[in-house]
Image 1 (cartoon, rainbow, N blue to C red):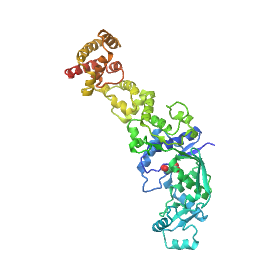
Image 2: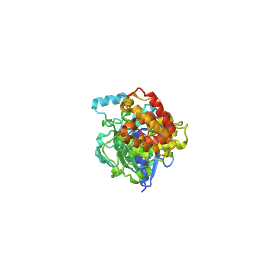
Image 3: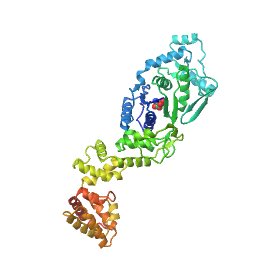
Image 4: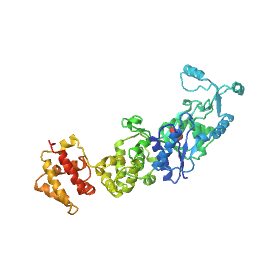
Amino acid sequence: MKPRVRFAPSPTGEPHLGFARTALYNFLFAKSRGGKFLLRIEDTDRERSKKDYQEKMLSALRWLGIVWDEEVVYQSKRSAIYSKHIQLLLETGKAYRCFASKDELQKVRKETNSYLYDGMWRNKSDEEVKEQLKKDTAFTVRLKTPRSGRSYFEDIIYGDIKVLNDEIDDFIIVRSDGSPVYNLTNVIDDNHMKISHVIRGEDHLSNTIKQLFIYKALNLKVPQFAHLPMILGEDRKRLSKRHGAKGLSSYRDEGYQPEAIINYLAYLGWNPGTNEEIMDLPKLVSKFDLSRVQKKSAIFDLKKLNWISSQHLVAQANKEIFNSVRVLHPNWGVTRSDNYCLKVIKLLKPRSDTILQLVDLSDYFFSDPKEFSDKDIKVVWGRDTLQIMSDLLKILEHAKEKEENYFEKEIGLYTKQKEMSFGLVIKPLRLAICGNTSGPSIYDIIKLIGIETSANRLKYAIEALRYDYV
Ligand code: GLU
């Protein structure tokens, strides 16, 4: 049977990496088996749910290319359906009203030395209930859970999960303000949406047991469950801002491409069992299998994300990168032709992890360096540099009328003739022309910015650094 899965975020915070990974695994699982991936917004918590977060979530999914099938289901629009189910549970005696006040519950907890509800309203007579209703006493609705025996389910990733039933109390399914709790709405909606597999974070394992009781009470078909390992920081603590648990939009603003984020997240808790690490979404779909999802927590590794990102960037078409750059920086390269910008991208993409880094590295393609750092000068500008650079300037000026690789060849001859190391020549030349000490081939740069610009820059540096040497 083709699976139907859903991603069911609560719009109570910025969408982050964990959010995206759960969505992705659901998507990959569904698509790898020709099934459907649905989206449900669990927005019943009126105080904490924010429209802004909801919109950010939808736009994050779109950006990542995690496209949902069918219409989005909003829980806030389904209260009538929940009420019907609550009514049914009350009528069939599977749930009951609890009129205990907070103070009363507190007192019992102290007396019994247990956080579990002691069932004080579980077996009250109809008269007692009616009396309280007449008095308009506030109540919650609690599920009548089994008092003995064991419950268990088989998780696709974690295997057999067992609990002793008396470890779970008659938990609240409707709050005193009449609003149904997550565990109840979640079950009703998964059933309504005909969900075959529930794939979500491992932090929901304890909810799953409670939900099983609700499935049973409502006589609904239980889906299969797969709980995903947590994502931890390198210090094995829960992922937090400190570890890069920033909102997904920060990654976008930092110039990570969605393909790279998707690829990285796919490997955060799963691997295909081969050495292959760079995959796009269709390839991931073809390889993904829940049985290869690990149990142990996944560790967030920024270095790996950057590496994956750099691999995607290098494989991406220059034109596509150009479009992405312009989305982040609409004015990048506008002083030059598109063709020139594409050549800059070609030279810089093998040296960049992200779009933003590429942009940061690209300054010298668009403006002449006017300042040189003391640190760089110290490293590359020696006693003889001025003479060498003056010689190079002559060669460069001469190169104007010559064939394409003339300059490159002449520098080769020059260093040979003077029995000089190549670095002695090239490093200060790079500093003069680019204002830094590393980058793509200096000959490629000169070819792109042009002999004249290069000669002018060299002239400028010779003047500016006339008295600087170590
Ligand atoms: N709204 C829940 C959450 O965001 C959904 C959990 C589930 O997938 O059932 O954690």
